[in-house]
Length: 97
Ligand SMILES: [Zn+2]
Image (cartoon, rainbow, N blue to C red; front, top):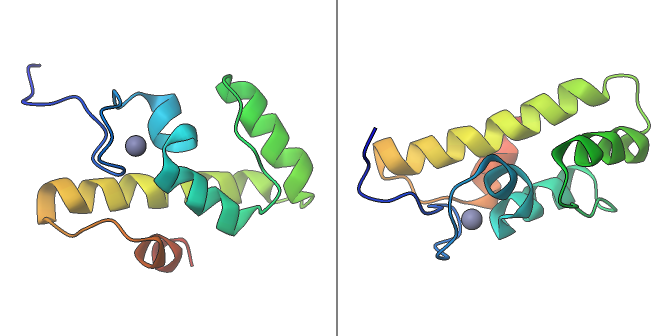
C-alpha cells in the first residue's frame, strides 16, 4: 500500500512509524508509559520492553495494563488521522481509564 507519508503523526518528528517507535520510543508514547509506569525506560527490543513493564508494574494483571496502554496510544493515533483530533496525553489517559 502506498501512503502519502510513513512518518509518526504523534510526535511530528521525521521518524518512520514503526511498531517500536509508535509504542515505545515516540515522545508521546514515552509520556503515556510514564503515566502508567513512572520508572519504565524503553529499550531497543520490544520483548525486553514487555518484560521490563511486567517487572516494574508488579501486578498480576500487568498484561491488561500493557494491552490497554498500547490500545490507547493506537486509538489516539487513529483519532488524529481519521478524525483530525490532535493527540493529547489527557485524551490517552481518558481512553486508558
Ligand atoms: Zn513519534
